[in-house]
Image 1 (cartoon, rainbow, N blue to C red):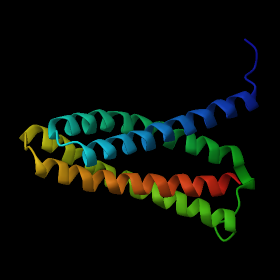
Image 2 (tube, one colour; image 1 turned 30 degrees about the vertical axis):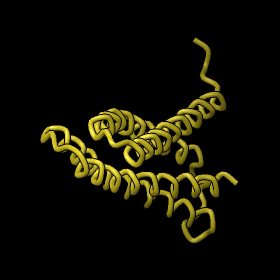
Image 3 (cartoon, rainbow, N blue to C red; image 1 turned 90 degrees about the vertical axis):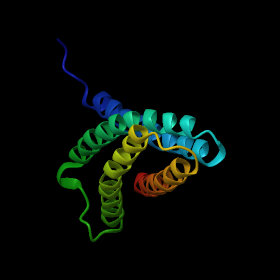
Image 4 (cartoon, helix red, strand yellow; image 1 turned 45 degrees about the vertical axis):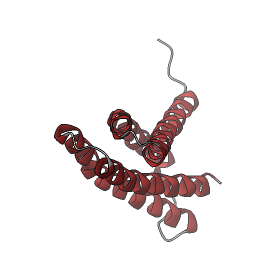
Length: 149
């Protein structure tokens, strides 16, 4: 078996990282549009449930590939007191915050489904949690763009 090209492996890891972020951000945007524009709370709840499954899969890929990307820097990783290091610290804090608030969001969506609460209550709750999720994902994407350049 031929050895694995480290450059090709790094490219695959970065591609998976970007694809997972696209799923997380795009899904949050889609659910936010649905809950803000549709009156059908059952449809909004179904979209939220589907997103939660995708989000946690994407979050797992993001964490694993993020650690892989950091490992690729090795000892050359800039210190937190540098501009790049400060941006990385902001991104890591935002990711941690996203994961911390996502667990209650997922539990709230599951509770809404199990209680079969309808109408305005469901849409209001979903609007709030997906607006926060979308905002945090946008911040993470912005900081990632700063780090890339």
